[in-house]
Length: 306
Image (cartoon, rainbow, N blue to C red; front, side, top):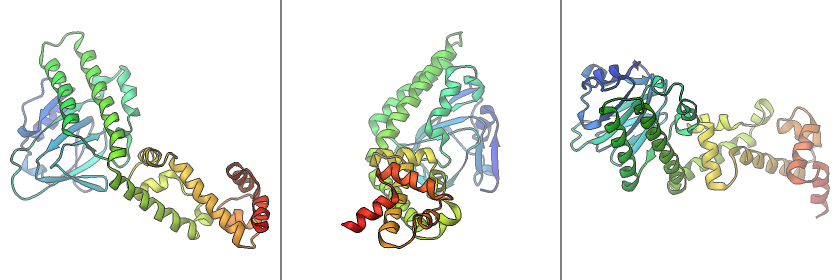
């Protein structure tokens, strides 16, 4: 993405959106209806030095989120960690009735707390290519209640309890988000199944070509890069829909290919091992037996005897 605007502070974010200065320099809740983007930034891509969580609806635009684009006609949540890049492509016309909120959290606000480590463990901040969270009306109400609690707390007189109270509310928000993401894996089956279908095509082409010899076994990271999702997201998705990890799925494909070569070709076990990307026949035999409980030769003999 060209023309990337880096925003280092929450105060700078407020300025680029023509908002009043934030109540707190390290955390802010923004009413999306109050934003008025400065014209010179309309065609820019963005990267922030802070965490950015938002829920938007009724906005005449699409957000380019990795390789995906999402409308704002439903409640859609986005999660950006520091350094991630995104762009908003605005449609002609107005955005009457637009609504939503943004929660901005600078890493210095949570520094030294338990959340500073925990926040990195939430997959939706770690996705190389992000997946938006579609929330129901009921889920949106839950999130809004937490945001209102945070807003009330930092607008009140700051005392020694304020930071811990706000951080606990952020943790609650993130925990609900994780729950809703898990629900999304199960309910957005059409989109998720499309990812699985594409993964199947990629693996089939990979195993039917010469890639195994030249590149070895495909990794989850390799599949995620092609599918425009992170390895963590792909593993979570495959596991939620099939009960197997993405790596197990790859191994199953490899075993199927091995069984095919052992049963319908005259290749030696060593030649089969080489064709499947193994450097040593012993490694292939050990792998095959761990999956099939018999050696490659035993499998070939049992197949030929049937």
